[in-house]
Length: 466
Image (cartoon, rainbow, N blue to C red; front, side):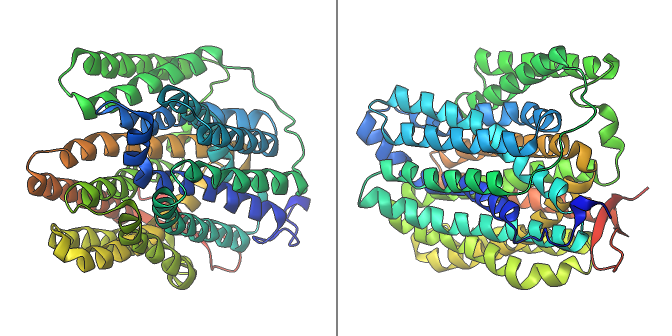
């Protein structure tokens, strides 16, 4: 055991708290904002369909720059990039709260997305870099799930309540102090030694990879508005072409930004695919339902927040009471149990197509939230350790890129179905697609096996079955 693996660095250290608060910042921002969107459109005079840019302007740079952010984290101190991302996010949040026009708000959301792309991969990377003891690492990953669930629980309720009372601008104010606290705590923590071996800067790979992701995500966003438009297909095809060039560059360059060999690491490809399905299904569901209960049921923002809060309650309770037990049984079992629960919960939502079925929605959301907490903890843990501490930033960047692209696809596809004239048909199709995501994660779980990495045999890592 190295000096960095000293038992004094536990999951409850200053670094641990920085990680959890950084995670809360990301989850709280998205969950609180969804229910404020109609009021923002009304107050700032956004044109029909334009309000989605409040979400898209954040998602586009976030999803496109995560890979770059993860790569940068392995070249410079992870703590330094974490602080830059957290402080920048806080400043951008304040600017959003003070926005005088819709255009200014969208520009500030772009800035939020850029800084979030620096912060988010460092959250998971610091888990892999900071806790060499497997038990502490597993505890830290599970605590991320619990704190993230708390952010999602507080977000819809607080966002809806603030929107209906103080106003939508307060939704942006609440994330700033949390981000500053995270930056302060990671600065107070004992720091990792500087990386001794620095690779050359892969400028061509960074440019082609970032441009390709920007084009693909933008194309997916446009597909949600007009799937047949020439701009949509131009962006999608151009993005795919740029990503193909990126792969060729990474195959030939001496010091690639994303070494292609990482996808031969046991468990990592499954975690990446699972991350895509996770974000499409779990976060896409919250976006889908937030629109549905307000449009089809006529619910207010605060009422919608209360209805959706059971998802996060399920996440927290599963993280506190179920995950500690399942972590001792292995990540394969966690994926199967969690995805099975999530699939059952989404199918139960088919009984909540009208406002009279609000109680079915609350129960179903609780079940989906619990299932998501179980399988996402296994996926997060696998992604954080699959490539080792030296490449933790890269692993987190790839994994979170897959997640955010999954969210972009989910918002584009589910948003289109939520806007169908036949609300009942749109609801059914959306729920079926979300259920298929949970089934896909179950298939990943069935194709995996557990492998002991802890001396005490309590903590297991995921490997791909040969």
